[in-house]
Image (tube, rainbow, N blue to C red):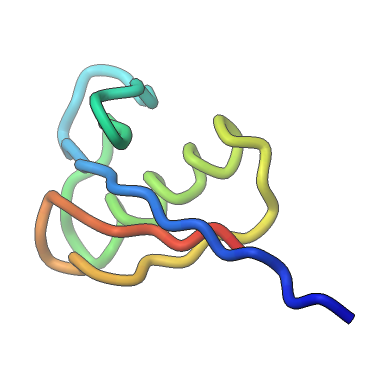
Length: 75
């Protein structure tokens, strides 16, 4: 059975925005979230928005837990 292909994308998360939005930018995405960057809230909201926007079920934060620039793995 073939192994599923994993894809990696770059995102930049902008917390405390006026709107929740996902925008294509160069080789990745900019994800604006209304919530603050406290207790992983911004990361969780960003991943949720990306799931809806990309139409995928499973994504995982690979790097950038405490930074605005992150790498996401699409499973």
